[in-house]
Image 1 (cartoon, rainbow, N blue to C red):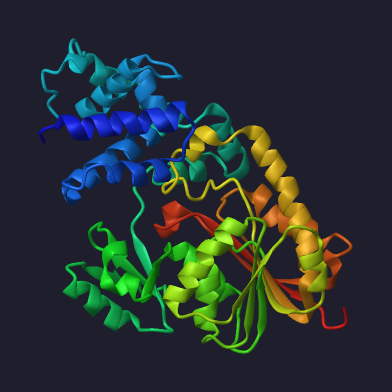
Image 2: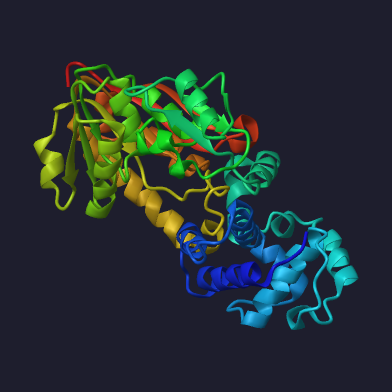
Length: 406
């Protein structure tokens, strides 16, 4: 592979924004890819994949290059040189690569790779937390899988089409996909591509949604005509899935504390041909209280550490702090306590997270069931999804039913 200056400069600029300015990797990459209209798909994928790779292995590469944050531009070029050397890419004779110790880089890599926290490039505290919560063996396998690039998974919008027709339509646009047998609405891209430019996407035939995330709406057991509340809807991936499962019949109330996210859901709903969603911003306790005892179904897709989706958000490893995890556990507990009151007797709720930590998952549910509010509910079933077992994102979901006499 031959390195091109303008692409490498884009990578260095992106790393500066992520590592030194604290910007989110996905947003930075979106900006970078708009820089030059002449860049083809290969150029774009080089930028995106190189940035993500160096972000993913920031700790390992920093140790090898002997540099520390905040990184100077020279430091960032050293990280780039480590990445290129380990990929077997010949470094051109640019000033940034003068005196790059190629053999030393490989030797340091071999040495550091013997230790998990360096090999998988994670902060000490996350490594310790993972071992404590899911055990040495499971954690080792899980964090290895979380460093692999995630597949692109689509969810067919059954309000507009079906899997077979979507697959044919994408084929006509030079995008190959395959069915996933255990996921009724999912298609996996056999090669990465920009699916957002396709006619199929513009016509609302699909959404990009990981296979594990697609399990959540199914778990809620919705029927057409129900009153369903999605209480932490965000930009609405699961809301739209619920709408298609309900065949656009009944009512979905999509709630979130961020109005900006609900605005994105509005745009997506229009494209998907969904018209049974009402949106409510949670700006006080009133919107929740108004719905007490009204919902047939309630989805609580709770805010969490995101340790099940590091493949998609590798920069989260460097942004997460131990106190955030402690605080989010308190928040989850409060949300379960307050929001569960919206379920009517005989109704059901699903509590879900994209975390793999029992403290955010089973333990939250167990704690809730022993509380005064939780005593009105019965545990039905739960599902723990680990990336190294499923091949998809790490997730948790629990189904609870409210007793009929409450």
